[in-house]
Length: 104
Image (cartoon, rainbow, N blue to C red):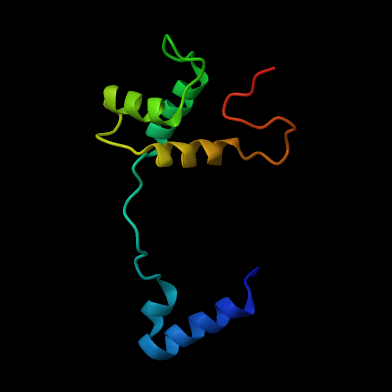
């Protein structure tokens, strides 16, 4: 089935302790909901690939975050969240030059 023996052992323990329903479902995980959904991520990537505002050579994470708020995509987003989303997009193992908007 493509699972490790540790996973099987954990499911078995949950079954023995709490029954079938507990063994088949996961408990809620910690952490809050995602700030950017798929549409928000698409807008962010589109912005990152567009020309930066006048007076700037390129987009910074802080500029992108403030622009997302201006466009009312989200009520608020940190520049760390912007960096994380763009890093996720830029990780491409099959291409020589990876990126959200590769140039040249």
